[in-house]
Image 1: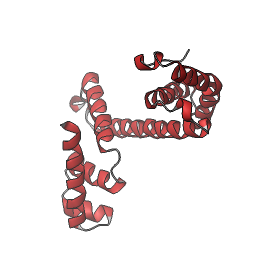
Image 2: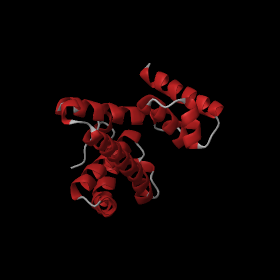
Image 3: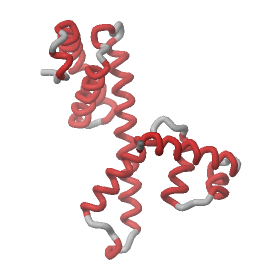
Image 4: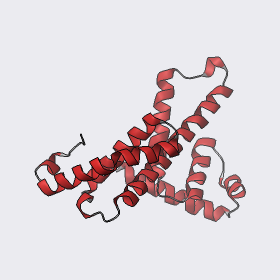
Length: 174
C-alpha cells in the first residue's frame, strides 16, 4: 500500500490519483530501476523514494506521461545513490592508506561518511568544476594555483568558483 502524507489523505482526488499511479506503475518502476542498479533491494528503495517525491510534489493527478516523469525522478535518485557510493568508496580508499594506529573508529568513520554526503548535497546544483575546486581546497588543502592548473582554468576563475561554493554553503547553513 502506498504511503500518504497527512494533507493528502483529506484530498480524495489526490489520494485516488496517487493510489492509481502507484498501483499502475510501481512494479514497472521497480523493474526499470533494477535493470539500472542491479540490485533488487536498491531498486525497491529507490522506487519507494520516487513515489514519496511524487506524493510530496502533488503532481500525480496531472501527469500525462507518468512513466516518463517517474523515470526522470528515479534517474536523479540513482545518480544521487551512485554519487554517495563513490564518495564512500573514495573515503574507504583513503582509510586503507592510513597506518592501523591512525585509522578512526567505526563510529568516527560513519560520522565522516555522513558529513561527506551532507557536503555533497550542499554543493549539489553547482557546476562540476566549482564542486571540484571547493573539494580540492577544503579536503586536499590545495592552493588556488594548483587547483587552477588541475582544472585548466585561471586562478581568478578558481576564486570565483570558491566564492560560489562558499556562498552556497552559507546560504544552506542559515
